[in-house]
Image (cartoon, rainbow, N blue to C red; front, side):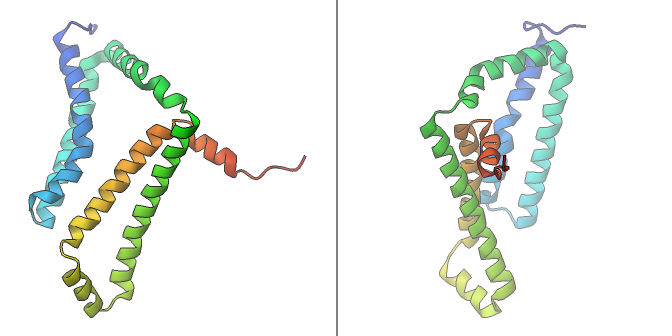
Amino acid sequence: MTTTKSSWRYTLGKLMFLVPFPLFFITPIVVPFLGFSAVETAAIIGTALLTIEIVWFASIPLLGKEGFKSLKAQTFKVVGDFLKYPGKQRYYTGLLMLGIAIGAQGFIWIWFILTQYFGTEEHVVWLVEHFDHMDAILAGIHTTAIVCTLVGAVLAGLDMFARIVKALKYPEPK
């Protein structure tokens, strides 16, 4: 049975393929701020991400081989050239955003190491008392790092990692 663009299978498959994509990124960012306990938050996020994955993969049989190829071609037609060939300014902006993401993640790791391994109980209590909602601050920094990573990768282009490896590669003597 073939799937055409006018069939209900293609339409439902396309919805099931596209709708979970933003939810995959929004769910871990929004749920921690809804006021649930840490266990409930982890359970909600885990269940939501698992459900999103199941819906995503269930869309492929509905699309069929031709429908999946058509959807993939439409997507890369729209964003393909934008992602492939960045200009010089866009490339360096993307690298800057990736640097911000690495710095933000580094800050989180340093914070964790200092408070968990080198800090005494009095230091940790002092930090918590003087920085209200530190968990929300760290979640915000982590969210910023995720956004900077995604936007930086898009701005720098798909061949960004190949360019970085080429720039860092030791030139062999001739």
